[in-house]
Image 1 (tube, rainbow, N blue to C red):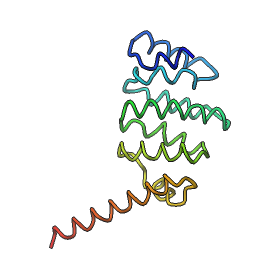
Image 2 (cartoon, rainbow, N blue to C red):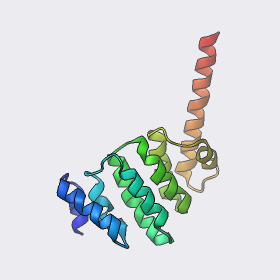
Image 3 (cartoon, one colour):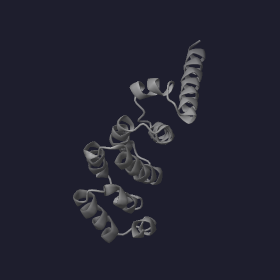
Length: 148
């Protein structure tokens, strides 16, 4: 599809097309790739709104591909709201693991979701939980040893 090819270009006209289509279409996932190289601060609100308005396994699953591409290309703490919203709506373990990794890398992983990770059906999500937990323990040990 043309949107797949346009995802590699940054241009105000492509961004405007994305904004127009994301606000008006019933299948916004088709146009999410247009934001990969045209994402701007504030787009997180639109993306969160899209997730909140989307229902159904397939529709949610299609959205997650675009969100992952957008936030892999545009790391930002602003990923928190849209990624948490989609995390709570989906049951695909593989994508939950990817979403958790992006939230962790952007320092926006909530304590509640962190605690849930240890029970996730996805091996990568559980491995990430163990990695984070170990890092927290190692950090605590370092802090304690520096105080003595």
